[in-house]
Length: 56
Image (cartoon, rainbow, N blue to C red; front, side):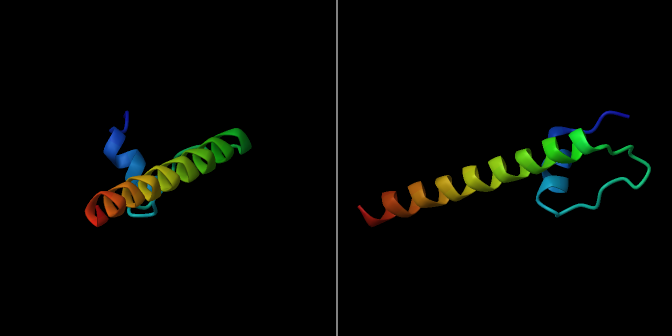
C-alpha cells in the first residue's frame, strides 16, 4: 500500500511511528535522514521568515 505524502512527513518528524514490517536498508535510512533534515531546515526557514515579517 502506498503512503500519502502527509503520512511520510509525519514519520520523518517522529509524529507517527514507522511500519515495523517495512523493509529498511542502508540507502533507505540515509534517504529518510536527508529528507528529515530538509524538512526541519525548511520549517525553520519559514518560521524565521514569519518572525521577520511580523517585526516589520
